[in-house]
Length: 287
Image (cartoon, rainbow, N blue to C red; front, side, top):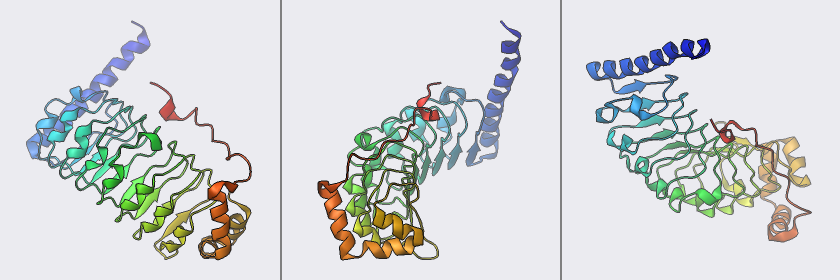
């Protein structure tokens, strides 16, 4: 055994003992919030008895090296917030979506390439962060847009070229993050998201926007619309130089609706814009 290997052992052991110490203290004090950030954890087996702590409402496991979530996590019936960002997750258990009180789920910065069937069955989920993974429209389960309680959906830094029209079913959605994908189009149904106050579509392959975007309240003081770094058709690009409000007003015109319809019906000038090179993304590199 090399000297460098030996020197690492106490560090790993120390991190594991820190995790156990957090669990033990939580049991003793009946603490409802568990913070296990950056504890060098690789699996849930390093957290004995965790799934018996049914009083837990918040569990933070970000910045570890966990690759699989034990389906028994669903035993945490009072869990409201689960943060597993920045791990090595390649899949999620279907049991997650059966958790009765889960309001916030953060699994960003992982290596997810698919979602389990029935994933959209969450009864009260309000915030879902799936950003910085390897997801696309082909892997979304049929009920994904059935999460009627969802207020914020973050899908940035994935591989989406299209967003299904079922997006319009998310009637309570206030924040939609789609930046840094491969989007070629937004569905016209985005205009049905009447509570939407933040739309992030920067750094995609979008050339046009559906006119229905103009139906949304994206110009108030508390609203945000980000649309830079897209190969917009010239009329949109020109209006964008003047400001978002000019874009929104232009989308309402009959002139633009004609341009949009021609574009969508096959009148695109030339091949679609090229995809960005994502081969060096951390989510693509196997541990």
